[in-house]
Length: 362
Image 1: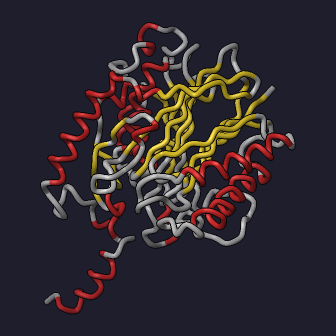
Image 2: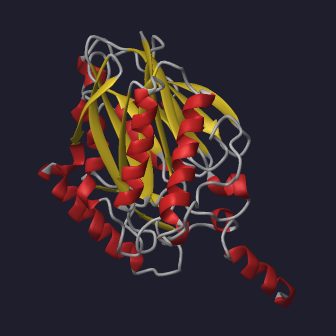
Image 3: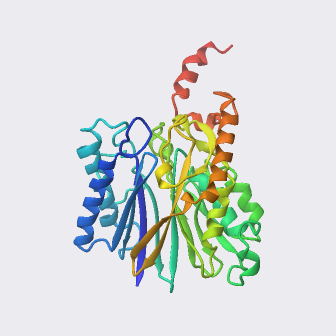
């Protein structure tokens, strides 16, 4: 049986600024998804938050980009917005809903989407990653390290089933085009692209024999809306073990925090800090950017778990390092390299400031 895992998220309003999802929002989302499960549309579901983003994990047999599944997610976000966020005056209610009417697919309408249709293996461990206060390009480095870096993933050297490498599908989000690059042969070409995290984004990873290994959301909200409407807060699904990176290898890239775009007003660089669900609440300078990792076992589409993988004390060290990085880069205030470059800031209020000052240049 083919099973589809759909992870769809949206910022539909949050408590005390861009801080955390309100419990009533989660409760209503669960109620709606339970009704869909009772009706047979879903096999299973799980609802959680990453910072101020409401995250829906759904399993079903309808394939990727199915209008009924996407319509269900859209309805959850609209209902939560109208019945909880707006009556409670939660901040930025419905922020990620860029349209009033559902058009059959939430891609391009604001919510972030990562989906994969797979044949379950004998044992199917998956990790759902969700980040807040950053953009889809934040996955570029971790995915490269998981699937192409032998210093991170020992299986690339010692496991024959990984030895032939992986194919990375990279999307140019400005041109809307994709390219497939094979590692290790084209590793340098791949790095030449994905270092530009605001434009070239890893969308999928396949094993050399075609097995789908990972999929990430690639939506850039500012490119859709033409203005700053919040950062994109991406999600990612990674399959593990049995000819793929081990769970520990998939988590290892986050042990060493790296700088990502986003943070305060979507306009700054900050360290991506791995946290457990209880700490997925952004405060200091609306951050730092956070990432959570939920481990599930799939059993005929049922979600067994989750394990809150970053809650492990092993990542206490990573959190300390991330906070040190945050302190250092905040010393630069609104001066580069703490703040994003002009090509990113053009979607924020900086654009109006530059236009206002243009006539005074001489």
